Length: 184
Image (cartoon, rainbow, N blue to C red; front, top):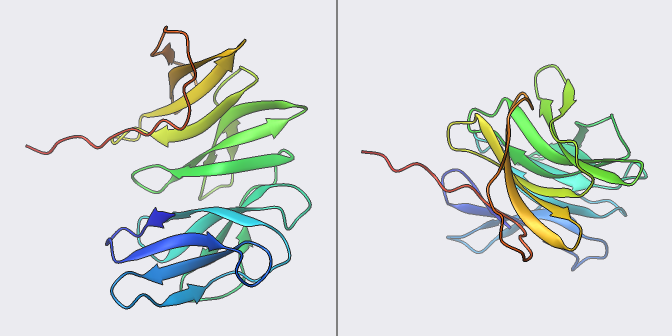
């Protein structure tokens, strides 16, 4: 699930009527609203900053791709066209970019889509990257990566030029999220 920017709604995935679809839940009234209805799997909902749309992953085109649907209703719009696998959307704080897991030929890298132009650039060069999360200032993307049998934490700049390994301990790191800056 994902909270709306105003904290009054949750977007979530339910398969109560068949295949998994995107719903919103009004937390005050407990009313559900179904936003997608398709035989495909719709999952991983993320709110846009204005609270008017939800970006989600769907395999309705034959492979996992990112789509956007208006919370007022309407037909979902496909956002990604490069690559056979685009999932796990994370929006930049200004809403201009979407970081995602981008798969091609069995390798999964972190990529960034410029929403206005549709331009996609691959930010990482390893084979098993996952769970992108934008820094609060929108300049870096945090992600998990697997090397051998171990998971590590990395950050990459939004132009892909600077990459930093943030952990060296052996273990398994999954689903990192960048916390907000504290206001003073």
